[in-house]
Length: 263
Image 1 (cartoon, rainbow, N blue to C red):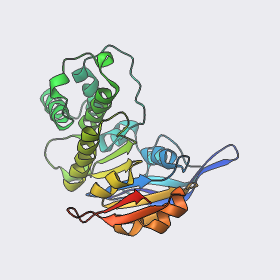
Image 2: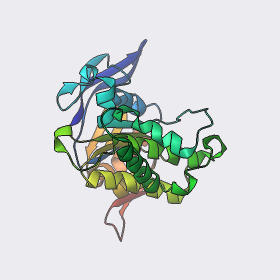
Image 3: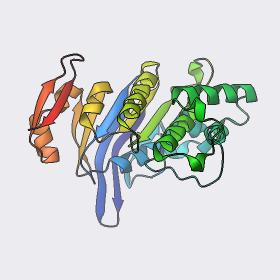
Image 4: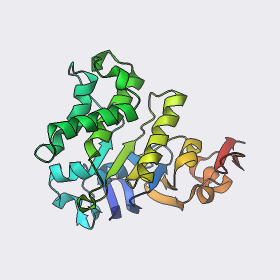
């Protein structure tokens, strides 16, 4: 059971945005993709979500091409938090989060839906905002509402393995969040992986990524430049070659995880 891209390329006109990328996200794994602007990170995530069809290669879930999944069945197995979710309707926070339960119509009863919504609200630390009007919220609060929505989308009661593992794709999810909520969000993603889900996130902060990720994937110019545990990826050589940045790569005295400083 995996969510995977196999030799995926995506072109737009004459521009090659993603170049023959293979990447697998396994149940119980938190994968973070990093790389400079324009490296193809979001394009790859869109391909893995099924929103973008590769020009070459294919993406599959449990060995079945994403194009062969029905939209509702795919939505019950994977959720996506885009960079800038757009919503202009005057809904309450609870109503926005409830939108995530739409793919479960006919597959879950109302009580199961509300339990999933309440769990998602609590996990995203926004239960106190449940009855607030979404348009009145700050940018950071809105981002946390959409996190709750995608959490509710793949929530289900019990661990019915016949339904298969669940996957969450997060495209720069820490946008608009303060430092505390950045940590909480990424810790939540790591917790989901620890319970058996597969999570892939795009992050800009390599130190935040290294603190929680099981594996880091570095994209550069549309291709995989490095792929491995944080200790093998966050090196002075890779940071210099990919980001054109001189760094000092150290080991955190408490976590034992790597971290980098401009140097």
